[in-house]
Length: 393
Image (cartoon, rainbow, N blue to C red; front, side, top):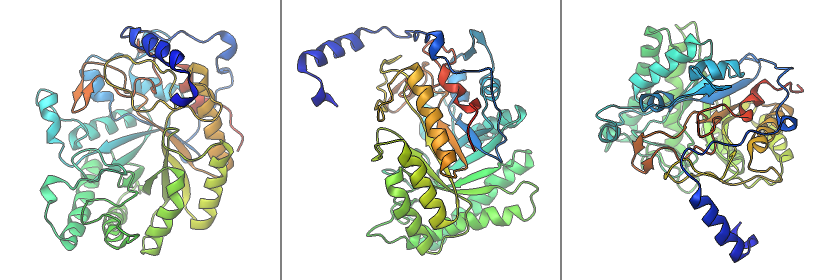
């Protein structure tokens, strides 16, 4: 993008961004750019998922984060429910002990924290999507670190570990009346999971498929005696990888799953037009006969930064501006494309990760404050109302 900006303009832009003060509130859009809220539609998750990954909320609030709607402080789960969210997605790490030194001994995204999130979601009347990373830390296309407790185990033992762990987690949830309606067996597992044993190398999905099958069997065995039978999601990042991934896992024998979940971010996609979203979903659905869903999506509302933690997603898509209205328009059009392609839902990643004094290995605050549904003062933005837009089905 920089090559399109003259050197002088770039220097001026950098100066202006650097001079922006922390906690700068976004300027509200003019009335003619606000979404029409007089025709709100609230969808049932079984018809179309309007999801929000709220895995950060507990930690943000522990560090003093405040969420407001129309200037009034409210519980964030109530805010999302009132703006159309029907599913809360929550990540689960096996044993994230590394977080303790950054949080005065407290852990987040462990089973205790995840069940707290699930309880808050269900208490507010929303369904739950439980995202099992099968790692002690972030799992994504470039990182699928095996949990410390499982390091050195052979494939056969790892298969049993995945089965027993998945079943244990679900039974804990059930015992607390928190059985998730959906469950992910892995997070953005483009190249497999539980590396190096379960890594996809030279297009060989064999070991990865066996690990997936163990997790899937645990869910199906659990469902045999559960009133709530979680739908199983397999998760790949970006549309350009989806067909290769789905072909790889199914050819390796993994066919017993319900949904193919896809992450779609402007910073990483090779798609160049919004219409390609519906085209890709339609093709994938017809080819693999599975429900299709955006398991993660987002769009920035500003290029400013609320803190000194560098923001990691800043790219615009096609002609959509990075602005308050741009975020709403992008998410509205993206959702319609998913619907038009026959997709089953859209889940927005970390709309709750506003800036506070919380810390991790990479910074203090949030690397996502420009992609949330809240301005730098904690007020809801117009983008959150894409979930109640009247879509054409």
